[in-house]
Length: 355
Ligand code: DAH
Image (cartoon, rainbow, N blue to C red; front, side, top):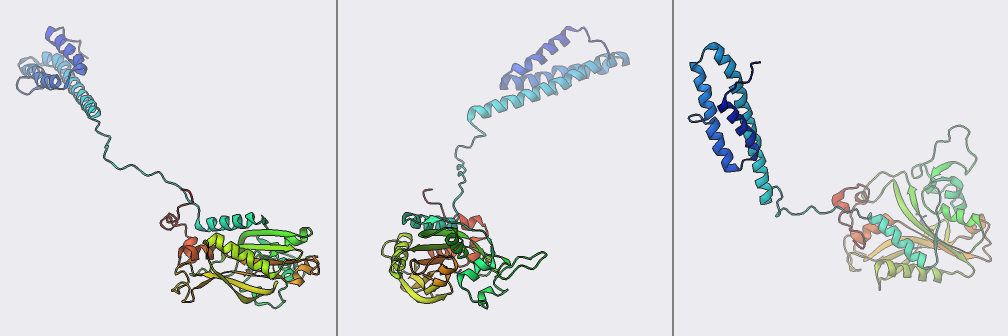
């Protein structure tokens, strides 16, 4: 390392180097030329004049001058960026005021959840409370107590998902399965205490079905049960017709068709006027103008007896419906699988109520 050269012009250059950080844009460019300019630059000139010196002098002064040159280049570069940043800030550049804002993302309720909540609320206003039961059930609760004949086709291995017994073979009716409907919760409610009962039972049920446009291996149901003294089919019809008006809108017409379920007698299915064509007949209702939305009936006296409820004193009605199916009817969804896929392009078409 050579000692600093005691040279007034060099001291002057060091002062000018220190001052670079305070220059404005015009002064900076002028100083760049005055010091580093190829023809007139002061430092350039001094570097050029090194050529006339002896090797020793070259070595002594050259290192110092070259270091100064590098420092000037760096200081001028840094100051240039600083001034450019400041200018951009002053102009508000970097913030594009014409850029459209990003929309705040909002979650929404799944259309099936909305249906379940609405149904529970409508029956809640009629005095029904919510009851729940387990998804793993005994064969007895799922079928036997509900008056299914032992050879009923629904009990076939093809529909029902049985749990592997793992060890000792369970006693008759005690095999475990994934409930195929929410009706076994009727049995649980009735066995828990004496009537009257007014409950709705939302829950997931399972069947050994593959996914296709109208089937899913797991789906929701809402069950209803009302048992009291003097309940008749008139109560069933009035309650369910009221529900249809509340759910689908005033003036919604319904019709009841005779049907069969082992746990009700008589049994019926309720249709509502097709929501998509207002009863005119379209592809969705296969031209009939009607859509089936639930099964129902008067609780079979065998079921009451199986649950230690005296059918001479108590009568009741029950119903069951599928929220996925109802959501499909309500929105004209052609394939149940859309309700399971979690595809945002589908789900965002159902903004939640109130949003
Ligand atoms: N459990 C029946 C099913 O899964 C639905 C049902 C029909 C329930 C009639 C009821 C009823 O309570 O009365 O297909």
